[in-house]
Amino acid sequence: MEENFYQPRTTYLKSVIQAIWQVDGYPGYRHEFIVPKGLMEMIFDFGESKPIQANFNGKDFQLAKCFMSGYRTMPVQHDLPQRHTYLGIQFHPAAIKHVLNVPAGEFTNEPMDMTLVEEFFNILWEQLTA
Image: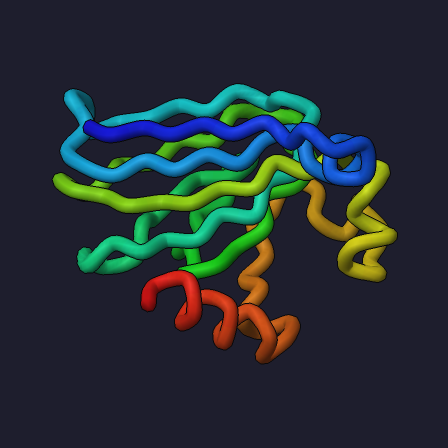
């Protein structure tokens, strides 16, 4: 499993983004529980398997190829595909209104399919896979 982690160095990026991460490969586990971290993450799924099913706060969701995972009050649980490739951007919650022009509270306890919100995210996903 290959993992990369980047923390911004410029003052502006530090005020918006806490970290950018990437994982690719075969994890040594199939079930994952993610505890609330107080961050908001935009996650791009570049895997070739079917979409991941996740449980957010007792509700089942099919995760999109680009989704926003916002404030959570309970852990998220999901089963991982055998191989997966993800890119994640961890935003400071206060920056979401500035970056997306949407209050951070809109993303509470539910993953938001960003490709349904704005066509730009489909285009961005395609560009990132090239």
